[in-house]
Every structure is written in C-alpha cells, then in structure tokens.
Length: 278
Image 1 (cartoon, rainbow, N blue to C red):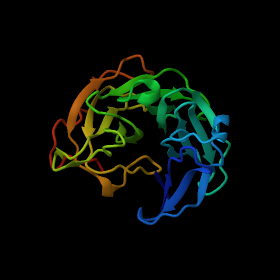
Image 2 (image 1 turned 30 degrees about the vertical axis):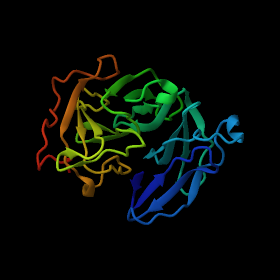
Image 3 (image 1 turned 90 degrees about the vertical axis):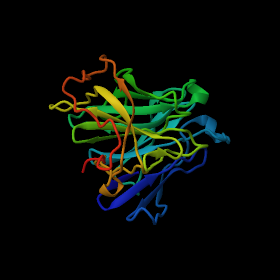
C-alpha cells in the first residue's frame, strides 16, 4: 500500500484467479472500493489451468518517476513487473524481471541518487530457506538486475520472514518484514512484551552524498502494522515504540556499502520516547 496525494492505494495477492492484482483506493484507510485489476491473466501458460496455491503471491505497489509500479512474484517462475500512469488506468503487460524459483514478496526501492534496488524474501517450499532477506541492485527502469547483491537479514529464530518493504528516513534505510509466517499472524508488540512474533526493522545509515550504504545494523521491533506513503515515509499516526533484538554487519562487497565508522548508532533499548522520528 502507498499514499499518493490524498489517496491510499492498495494492491493484493490474487494467486491463480483472473483478473488478478486487485487495486483499491481509500481516503481514510477504512472504506475501500475495487476500481481495477493490474493484470488480466497470470503471465505464464501453465495458468490456463487451475493451479491452487500458485500464481500471484504478495505484491508491492510504489510510485516513482511519475508512474505507479507493481512488483509481484510467481514463486515457481520469477519476479514480474507492471507499470501505469494511474492505478485506475491501463497497466502495461507484465514483464519478467528475473526468472527464479522461490523468490517471493519483491519490493523496489529508488534511492535519492537514482540507483534502484530490489528487496525480496524466499519461499521455503521452493528455495529451501525462509528466514532471509536479500537486496539486489537493478536498473532504474526495472528491466534487469545488476548483480547478486547480498543477504542483509537472517533471523533463524523466526519461523518465517517475508513481505519486506524498504523506506528511507533521515538518512536511514529501513527494511520492515513480518516474522512468524501466515499461520501465526504478523508481528506485534504491546508494552514491550511480544504478543505473537516480532516484526523486524533494519535501519541502515546512508552517507552524506546519498546512495545505498548500510553499515552495521540492528534489528528492531514495531508495535503497530506498517503503512507506507508514496515518499516511503510512514504516516505520523503510526509512529511506534521499537527496541533492539539483534545486530548484524553487511559484507563489504555490496556496491557502495561501507563500515560503521560514521554511522548513527540505533537505539539499543526500549524507552517510552523511543519512537520513529518525525
């Protein structure tokens, strides 16, 4: 979901149903109406027949360069992309960004310097792993990947890690990803005590000149569900307390990544005042 102007735009999974990728707008996050579908058919011949549980899994919608973009996975075929001038208008024929088995829940991110990245999770049923988040550089037009990138998040204490979304605020990059899997629900934290699974947040410091430059990072938890705007900044009404649960360092071989020498240290303990910056 994104916010663009006064409107929130939501896109949802549709599996093997067609038309697919339903699109719904709202002004208040309470009342929604179906106005469009981004695809008329699942983009692979096998979906001429019913494929239960397969097809379009969790998508991400974003706004960049005057256009709306939807990234969506076919967990057996790969990551696909479609684009439109307006969510209620005509969407392009989807194209295959990357053929891959087991890549799921893709989300694009365009940095201030024009560089673009893809973040995604993995389906254990196809890839044999399920608690990892990977970031890969890609062309800004979303036509091809530019390298392997690197794994930036590994949480073996979670039963599953999925649905990553990327945001940048005050020089930090945030990757938010629910942990725990569908059967147990998404993460929540109440009064500092986990009620189900935790929702991971990975803040990463950017250099003064811009660019994607995560250094040593901490994982944190969020107390409320996350909603993003078109500028990838959560609305002020969803500020929440967070606390540190683990720490990790990214390898130095990812383009423009660097050490933590000049990083801003994330908070290491929960406090009443420790909320997402305005």
